[in-house]
Image 1 (spheres, rainbow, N blue to C red):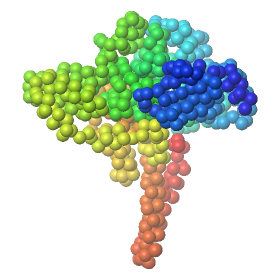
Image 2: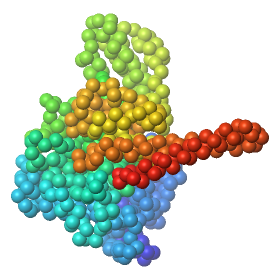
Image 3: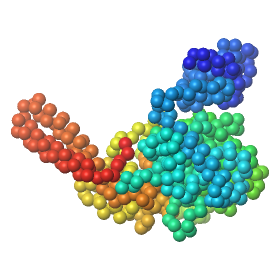
Image 4: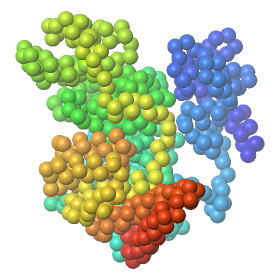
Length: 597
């Protein structure tokens, strides 16, 4: 291993490696820059080409090229080794298959699946039609190859059979998110008759997939887009599509453009605007923002935004503002999406990005376009909408300038605006959100996982609300209980994600943002009713276990205080709960449905 590390160091110059991520400025025999690992106004980050090391006198970070890549890419040493080995042209010896880690084998499954999908796009009638569709949309051959776009044939098990022939088990393929299992134990491909967009990590390794419906019957109920669920490799709350290709352009352009879809990213890169990534239709999450923070503090949104409403998009932008991002908004004209704009007029797309308005300007334009400035009620509503925005502006000079602007446009005194500003207190949820450490990895308990699974099932199968007896409802955490109560107030008979619109869609986006709730698409072949029943039985068991632990503590305290009568009573309760738990486990063992840990 040491020989490989030394060979990489001999072939790569630290200045070349680091300058591909950040802008270096020569100063004497060394180079300096603003440290990418902490906020600063004066450069304290130095690189020594003689010693082949870097160090920051501001935050104390230091090391060699491996330490730098580990830190800036947010990866472990093994991944940094692979990145630099590839750059240096050094071949790493492959491990014996018997000693490969389970995680590495899932990477291999994803890579082989990508090659399978790529091959299908160039063979067979359906694949060729899908490719023709992509070319008509404006994607060229180079982009299709670069982004490894593929096609999943209309087959129940062609991918599964292919991967099994390569030596991978059904369990491994399932853990990669590529197959589903029915209540009868039948396994089949997740993606069928879909254009496939591989999703990459920062090292350009495939970790997941998104599929766009193509060639299905018009009357068939199916989601237009379908993603794999969270896996050991893929977590949708922390992945931004295209960041592997965009991270260096983001640094060089000192800004990141956010779009919604896969083709938006691909078409933008194709016409030369390459500092673009996609949120894949979800609101910005703390984990995504923490990753973006490594590359730039400047964001430009280029998707539909309803700042006046209580939308998830607004909350995502508010979250970014609280994190100190400088945000601009590029308002999409005539309901066009970025892919169409980039295809029809690349120069207009570039200009569109360059002329993006500041977020505060956008808020002002939005507020004043919605309400009558001549009426007292209109002025009140405008101020109610904009005061929270002004409150979040951290720079007092900038804030004062916007206070003056609001006063002038409302034709009131600055003092009255300032008074309202002083009176305004951000909501508790917002305050808690803004104080949350965004680089902290969110860990979910088994209760969280099962509750979110139950919520997903209920959203896809509203009849399942009939299972919500009081005993089950009382087993839910307050967070999920409130969500379910709100769902029941939404007047809609169909909660399927493919059909969500308006209030329902915003509400589900809100769930995904506020609580990191994973709302997944449930396959139609699944016995949803049985899955819901199993989820609630498991939650009931978890609740009983929590009660047993609480009783154990009470019994111990009562024994210490020699309260024999109370001990006897508590022990009887403990025995009854134990019997209830045993009965629950017996019921669960009779079910074939499974809950993923």
